[in-house]
Length: 197
Ligand code: MN3
Image (cartoon, rainbow, N blue to C red; front, top):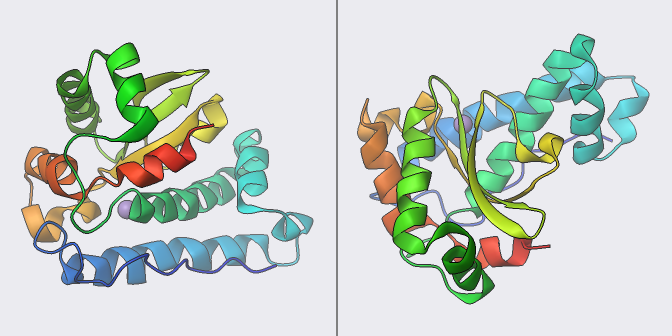
């Protein structure tokens, strides 16, 4: 099996002005594609190439000699998940079961926003901010570089890419402004609700 670049779930200009078509022309067509190409190169002729992306990630995570495979496989997964974590006309307060869980586990939407912004802006260097399901509870977390909740026994519900390449074209160095726009205008709560286990 060869891994392929997942198409975006919307047009490249659908999230403008909060995320521009120019950002997608680099972030999806070049960065995300490069992780796919690198992963296929690293797995060429190996049995692991026939496994699912999740199996590649969890296998590689246990073997320090497979750091390159882990980093590229996880970044393929993280980016596909990130594109679906956003939608045109998204953002604002959640709906559905997530809204109830947020009140119960995180102290409500305003507290979630504070925690998510803190996770996204205090991740030093490259990484990801996440809303996860940890057991039967919601939690906000962050990971560095390619790391992801899957290898920490948590279920990802939503993510925001805080690598500089995610926001530099549209926001330059202003990561907090990008995270605010993500929360106010982009978050796809339908996707988060579907991901609940
Ligand atoms: Mn990225």
